[in-house]
Length: 310
Image (cartoon, rainbow, N blue to C red; front, side, top):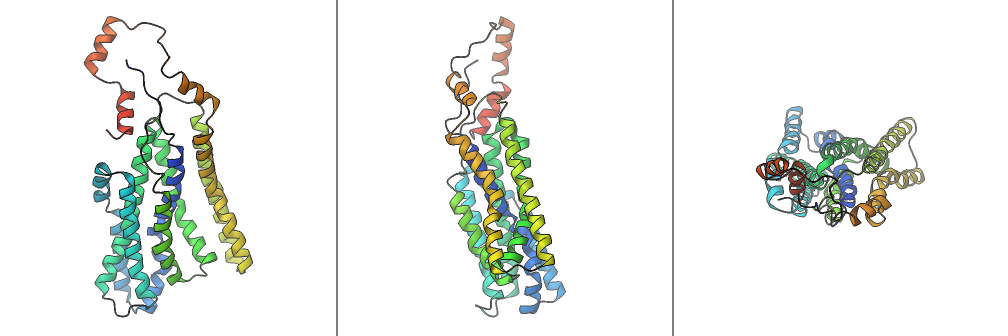
């Protein structure tokens, strides 16, 4: 069997960038934070507000088009479409809620919310598909980590809304319209396919465990600040302190992948240097050779080919 080629570009930075994109993709959970303002400022009744909630759910769950585009175009195209949808949709809602533009038709807001929340499907599809291809032997672990950060993003947005934005719905919509596309544009160049390394690395599980531990720390931090904010309202100086500390757990999921990329372990270096020199201890028998020829490619070859996007 032909020797398997090691990764030409380590995929760890892409995984760290995917964590930030997944946190940004939790914008669909923010509808309860500004729905009351839509009802009071724009004069919607409960039935109209419920239909807007339906638009929020439709946009979140329609992911067929992002999946088709992800199979034909690179991940940055998928992220760019999601960023534009987020900017356009939440921008319309902000114009209406801040009364910058008066008398926007109800159906325009309905489709605007549907487009805005559909950006989450584009973000999630891009990072999940790309990183599962980059880690073909750890697909379940990668998917679990990224989906965990996506679920945690709801608490992150709630805390940002209450502590940093002072419970202001127009500020939240402006943050969603400008902040999320900015995050995705910054991470766009890092979320890209790379040739995955072959073979099992015993230290890889520790790397995944560290990233998962960073999400647990972030969850505990969000829970603590939420409880404290319910009991006492923070002043501006405390809000600045909490916002500085807020990114520390999230940076933990990024710093370690950066370390793994630029300062790989000695084991990884030795494995990469000896990848083309490994020889089998036993020569394959003729029956095994015939079996390999009849099967075509091995399971690892198929996984690596899928990881390269072939």
